[in-house]
Image 1 (tube, rainbow, N blue to C red):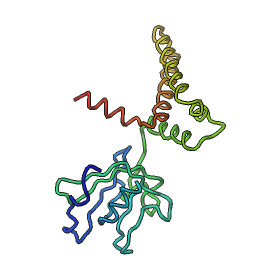
Image 2: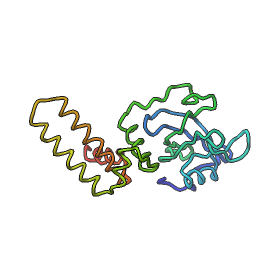
Image 3: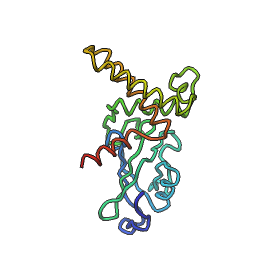
Image 4: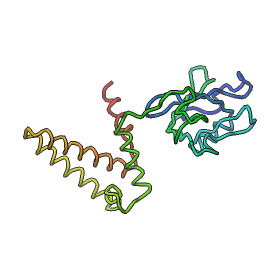
Length: 201
């Protein structure tokens, strides 16, 4: 959060500020809620979205009963300091009806690389003895980095020939091990994309 809670104008709506919730991966708008200063502070501290429930008249963490939390990625204020945009990674359906969004829209994650990244991160955080990915993490950063180097060399070798299947196979191997290396370093693909975007300016 690159602003202070004190920057926000809670007075316009009797102590509440509307919060637009957007999927960080798909950019789909998921829902609209309201926060007071305490809800915003709790959201930032716990990295899970907490609203002020107007019907219950209390703080309410989305998913506290269903388990369908909204994991906070970033939060920003608008130009008038009276609206918040929260980008999140939703855990399960967002709407109480079971729909992906409160607007009855399908929130499909079409980016397979982002899906694969999450699978790799899960293998890192929840090790499985049957997982090749987990075995790489257990061998340490040096081994993971070495595998990226090996796959890069194999891709270069295949690039000199005209066998598309072998070239694509090696390209996929390199991409996979590259994502493992990012996860081993606790970085995300989006951070690499940000660097590329900055260079593109």
